[in-house]
Image (cartoon, rainbow, N blue to C red):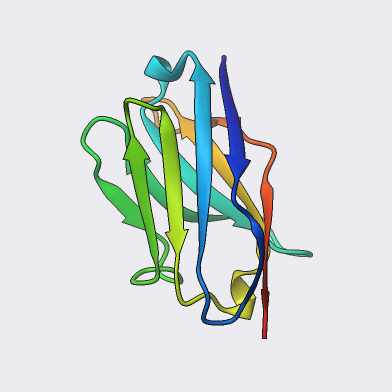
Length: 118
């Protein structure tokens, strides 16, 4: 089992920044990558960004490229999402998730709310 706890959400004005963190515990060595997803009201959950635990390679959704940066701290088993130039359309509940070697996200955090006001 892997436990994930997100933090860092909140309310920010458009153009502002927030940094989300995800603390992983448990059988973290079984995870292949970590990802961030988000779900806005009335919409499906969507992929935001991901990072490979060992190589540090990253992948981003087109909607956040150039504005969001995902990073990891292997020693602390934490993953962060730095969000800059935030837009009202970034408003959503953000989830941290852990993927296995088949790239299946099988562990999820409880989510943290991000609200961007215009």
